[in-house]
Length: 209
Image 1 (spheres, rainbow, N blue to C red):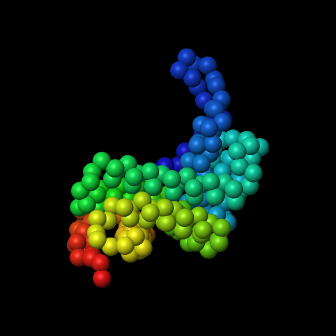
Image 2: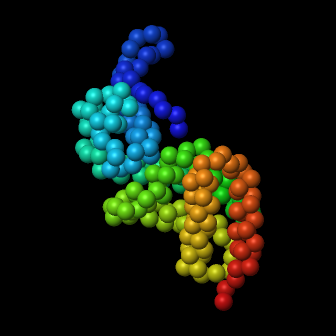
Image 3: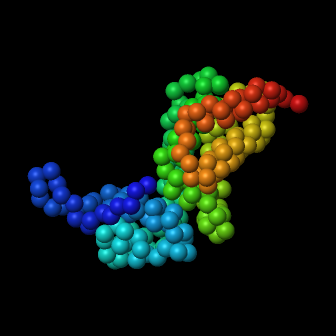
């Protein structure tokens, strides 16, 4: 994500100045905060840092978020929702298990490739060391697994299916973590095919014991 600042006043199409609506301002502040927190971490970031980066005063920031903790929690929720939305949208158009597997991984890896900051915020150490934030991350993981579980077309019970869904989420996270930590560009579509080949080979062998 590139460094950028957002002025408190924007220009309308007719050249007159106008202020952002409350929802638009909140979304803008979340986008800026994501970049700032990803760069400096939770403890290394202050509300002043976020306000300065967004080009607003601190009182404006506090109109939307009462504290740094509330802002960070809102970020975790927003990032998680974006990930879940991407996976759901990618897999909803097909009923073929093999295709759904690859499309789900493709959506995940595209999300990582396009927004390293979001991945680092969700799965970096800072979010895991704080219990409240860790619960938020676990909730995102659980929701992702719950969305994936119905796509596993195997003759197994629901608990077995959900366990496998968590394993698939972990597979995607582990592969992504390695690539992000290396700092190298990667083709998410190629990676999706590679990982889905592994996952699908395993899923085909799954059966009720």
